[in-house]
Amino acid sequence: MSEAKQREEICMIGESIFARGLTAGSSGNISARIDEGWLMTPTGSSLGRLDPARLSKLDPEGRLISGDAPTKESFLHRVMYEERPATGAVVHLHSTHSVAVSCLAETDPADVLPPITAYYVMRVGRLPLVPYFRPGDLALAEAVRSFAGKHHAVLLANHGPVVAGSNLDAAVNAIEELEETAKLYLLLRGAKTRFLTPAQIRELEA
Ligand SMILES: [Zn+2]
Image (tube, rainbow, N blue to C red; front, side, top):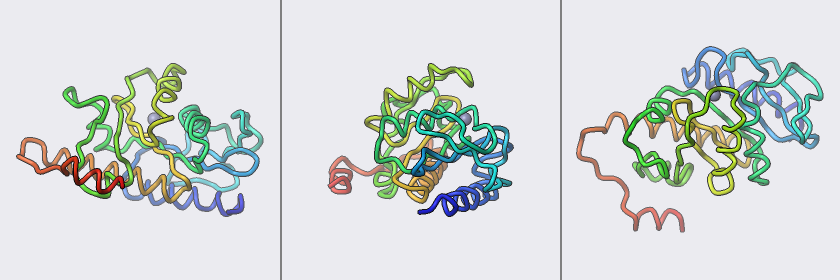
């Protein structure tokens, strides 16, 4: 896909995510790999009103080539590209239901959400909880790095999900599946629930 097309796609996806209330204010960020490095949503920008010409263009080391300064959370994206060479795009949101689940005290930090649906298992799989760090703390990048080799999706405690995909569609579909599953999980809490069985999960993984 050409860089111009990638720019258009990032802005269209941002507008769609914002319009559906999947992230609010100037939160959330999207990036995509291009030949010269990657494109990134700028700091302080609303995903609902992105300008293709002003997206941050970064070289492979994360230095700004053109456009506005990148989001202060760009390091979350960079570690995904570094640890997962097949990554074509990364999305990070402060989506309400995923953030709510990231604040629950009694979840399994190795796998925060249960296997509720087949699509969740196929698009997200196991979801580790990354410990809380204050915004901008680079220790968060190293914490994400420690999971990124094995997981394309992680949930930052008291913060939100970060999801990598082979392209923009794959990353967006996976983070939306994660958000919907978090919503289902909260709806089902307290009710006796049939989750997928280990045999059903093995069948999907095969
Ligand atoms: Zn964030």
